[in-house]
Length: 373
Image 1: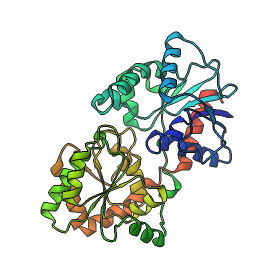
Image 2 (image 1 turned 120 degrees about the horizontal axis):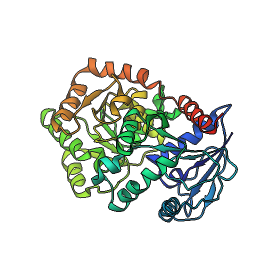
Image 3 (image 1 turned 90 degrees about the horizontal axis):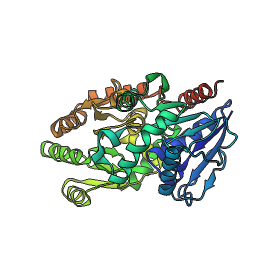
């Protein structure tokens, strides 16, 4: 089966949807009976080369102008030709796609934060998604939702029938699986100046990740535990990051900004942290939680959106609006060695279901269903 797959996000961003598209291509390519992939992207250039699967075909166009062209084409019902011509299925990995004739389209819906939390998006991006999502979700043959939570949000917000949606949990990359080489752990800890215990937080530094409350909770923790380990923040700066507030917290509370960290280094950080904290306000799928659990990190995450699906009973769940709950959970993990050991044991067992092979096979099954095979 020939599958045209949009990898625009993969070559223009490292995290989020970019990571989803990149790892999906890698996972599908690893299947012995996998599809014949036709990757393509619409961008002036590939900022991050696609290092897996067949070479990607470029549509030399700005990402923003391409996305608005797609919306206009849907409004006037004008089909488009491109690298996808002749494929059996078109996979829109970031929801949007052009009108295509005589070809089933599978579109992935990662989350509906633009509708549920418009304040977490720029006016332009949020307005675009609110305009295009009802159109493309109606016209796609099948939809993939990253979680049951996302499927429910999609049904509630668009009125689409559940029978059109398939829930496929994204897999974690092979780099985020035990065991991790102890020598690699020592190298990484030395490289990032983390010789002793540390608390880890991973994710793009933006309001939806609830960084402000994480920092306040860490401040409360240090008031109770004078010897609380430093908090290491992994992730690039996102939209509406309060650099001044973050800088003040870093100066006053031993907060270390590590920036972007390559996967192999990140795996070593997950495997060796004393606690992993991820009290996000909303997630279509909390991939950092799945990665942390896979590597045995004692994990603290939220009771909202998809995060209970990701964490199961293998993490401590907190109200993300409560600074006190986050701080108390951190204190418990750091002071109760039996609890920490229990979490380290249960995490990898629970996360084993989120394998890259399972993800690829489930996605391939959706392709076959859309194509009538």
